[in-house]
Amino acid sequence: MVHIPDGSGFHGGRPVPGELGEQGHQHARDDAVRQIFGTGGTCQIQYAVLKENDYKYPTTLEEYEAMIKSYLEAHPTTEDGLETIGITMSASDWHWMITLGNPAGFIADAQPDNGQWLIDENYNCTYKHASDDEKEYFKWPSRMYDEGILDPNFATQTDDDYIAKLASGRVVAITDANWHYAQAHAALKAENKLDKTYCDLPVTMNADDKAPTLKDWGEGSHTFRCVRTGKYMNTRLYQKPGSGEAVEPPGRIRAEKDNTLNWFVMEIFHVEEREDENVILTNCFGSPVQVCEDGGLWSMKPGEGTPFRMEVVKDGQAAAAELAKGKDAVVLALGCNSMINAKEEVDRGTIELPPAQRRLMEAVYEANSNVALVLFSNYPYAIGWAQEKLPAIVWSATGAQDMGAAMAETLFGANNPAGRLNMTWYQKDEQLPDIHLCGRVPTPGQGHPGGEGRQGRGNPDRAHRGRAAVLFPDSEGAGWQMTGEALPQSV
Image (tube, helix red, strand yellow):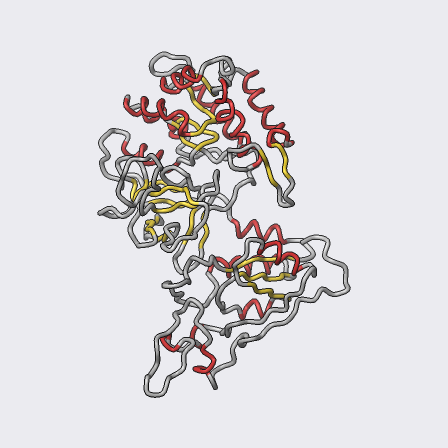
């Protein structure tokens, strides 16, 4: 897993030392590292602290606390002779929501750190601060106050006092949103105290409360999502009218999109591996991603891409296999994103499942062979292995807001749509005809008209008479029937 920020770069990757070039000050490499570490808000810590820990960032509240205390012990005062403060907050008027209320949403519940309501998978609503996890979280700042780590004046100081403390460089850690303390950040940067600016961290109470943020869709296409907000990283082509931001050329990269529904899917990035085990990122147009002088991530600029090192924080494949062990049955959902790799004006290069999905399927099967494969896709896949090994396969096209609930009802027998395939599914790429014959037959006197592309590979049955047997012919399909046996107790 790779952590992605909603600010300027991505978490868990770092530039390779010595390969960034001059950026105009003595902290060139460290500054480039810190610009990539940002995640946008919630728990934050000074880059000086991360530097002393070789940029190994905390992911749990326990680790965050230990890092703060260790730095305080080593640096009781600043270089300017000021007493170092472990943590401070701004609780005056409405600011308590930004530094005390909102952060609890992510730290305790792994929910976006805004709003006041939590909604579970059953659509039950809970006032955020009444949740058991948040009640447990609020014991933490209380304990930090008792131990002298939390600023004793946090509840009585004005917001201006709070910003002034951050600007002095004496506060090790905060729980805040970047926009709130932008003035302090600008002051520190102007004084070249970049190591006293703050890095946003994906800290939660429970180490398992992390959503996967790097998704490999195959065909070299990847998407990245911010751990904190769930938003997709994208390359800006233009700015929103009325956004209030200064006009700038296209190419800035931020994690700010809720979905991938665009004609040009600017949320796609390609990961190019290098011989030195580092990677170069390119955007959907193949333009390399660079750490630029303003500290942000950009593409669509001249020059080579900045090398990054990708670190695995959590192996989703291993976690899924472990979860499958010992269960009565496993439901494994695989498939496509309807806007990535195959759509109008975009063709697939293969009908094979993305390699990452194939590895996941095999790992889960090895852990538990009683797997029902649920395949969401808008085109055929070569799934001969699944057809041979797995006891059940259910396929659905994408295209409904309530698609997950509908599939669950089907799996548990609440409905029986008994659908039929509208395309032929082949066993392998070699069975496919020339792409220009896809779904077409010769017209007397006119030759072969244009093809439909690889996105669905059409229905080239007529071009395949006499060839090897297909996996599933056009119109193939059967109902999903629940037996009289008891439902599995653990799925």
